[in-house]
Structure formats: C-alpha cells, structure tokens
Length: 143
Image (cartoon, rainbow, N blue to C red):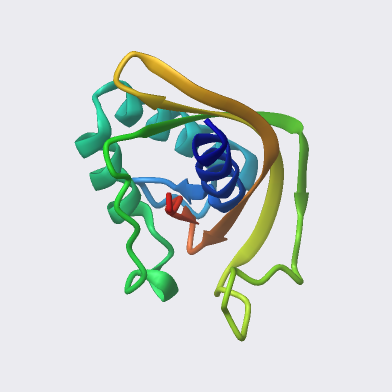
C-alpha cells in the first residue's frame, strides 16, 4: 500500500497537463485553460488510450520529445479557476529555460483512476502555457 501511495504522490506531483486542440489568438488564457481541462477530462472518460493520445497531441511543442506513458491510468483534474495566475519564472522539471509562451499556474484537484477504481485524489497545482492562441501542457509521468 505504501508503494501505491508513493506512486500516486509522484504521479500527482508530476501532473502538469495542459493544452487545447484549437488555436484562437483572440480568446483569453482563462477560456483556453478551461477548455483544455474539459477536453482532458473528456478524454479520460474515454479511457487511458484516449487520454494518452490527448496528452501527446497537446504536449508543449518545446517538450514533445519527452512523452510519458500513462500505464493504464487516467487523470481527472478539476481546476479552481479563481486561483489562476501568471507564473513567468516557472521551469518544467529538468528544463534549463522556460517554455515559449506565457506560463500560468492553477490549483487543481486531481484524481487518478485505473478502470473504475479511484487510486487517489490530491490537491496541487498544474502549469499551463499559452502560446500563439493555444494552451499547451506537460503529460503526467507515472513511475
């Protein structure tokens, strides 16, 4: 059970999904971020393979060479949009420079599922980078 708790903590700490399928420079960052979370959660509802495809399609372009297989889980993230704020000094783990675009951070409640079972829920923060009218992110990496 301790191993599962450690896995969950590492996964949720690394969960930084963001992105959006459409590009629209006239839309606000907040609306792009809301749309991203809705699309990510809809993909989770279709299963791990669908959410994996979503994360691959919405991975920030500067970090596409760093895919993370979900290993049969899904992650549902509910953002607390009142906490959304710019985070211009943020660097993804292992990065030497910030991603292109405007980085934002938002508090989320993230729940990890395997099939119909909830493996755990945690409150944390996720980063979203808006670049050229699209919200991008960083797929969670379970270990």
